[in-house]
Image (cartoon, rainbow, N blue to C red):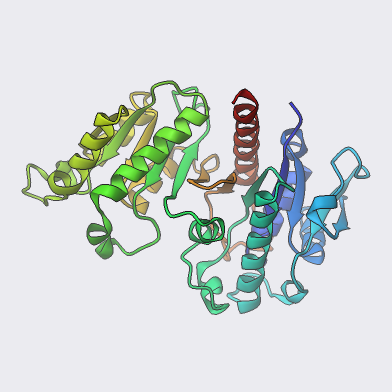
Length: 350
């Protein structure tokens, strides 16, 4: 099957995004999976290429609809499309900067529009900095919410996904979707609802079905220790989560819960479940990053387009110091390419 066309956004240029993109190309593995187009400033990409010690050159393209395929690009060239102004080129390394937040936002929405219009098959995003995004005047907590807004999606979620590998028993990999995401721990209980939990169970089931997992087994986390201990530690399990699981079962989904998170995630990694629904960010993230930090991939569920990203952040502390690694970016590219190919196969089959 033809390699999918993949837009790779540069993210916050003050962070490690440009370097991990350059190192991903340098590895020789990236173009085995896709036909890549970097969305960002070509001067920043050129600096990152030199930082990585690569001999690649930047090929600037004006329009994603007309960008050259990998076979047509001269060997050693990286196609780069800058959909905004030149402000990003002047951003200093490792510091919050309004211009970096503005550029990261514009790279993302331009790449998303290219995917919506079919000029690219999927997008993989280097990390943006939420504080820089705020400085630029954008009141979003992250990529997920921006993309949902641009795509007009009401039901969506961020899933942290480990592809098949040594850390995961299942041949389909293992994912955790989050009912709440970028919010304070204090606000989580009031944000939980039966509908929100039920929607995430359905999104997880749909994803697993899309990647070929027949009759997926979904475990649903409790919010409180010991699943609330029959109400002793809280009643969210009885009032919110259990009814959502019951609704999923009645609609034909194979869901179990609410189950204590500390044991559920271990059981899932060992192969008892194909996916997990977590109630909040760290409940799912800590476990998956502990067992597979460099291979964990963010996947946005519920969108009409494919979007993945590495699970790491902008890492200002090591940005532009030649210390960033491309493992997470390469994993995100592989997952995006696989999902894009799967969607193409599903369309042909239907």
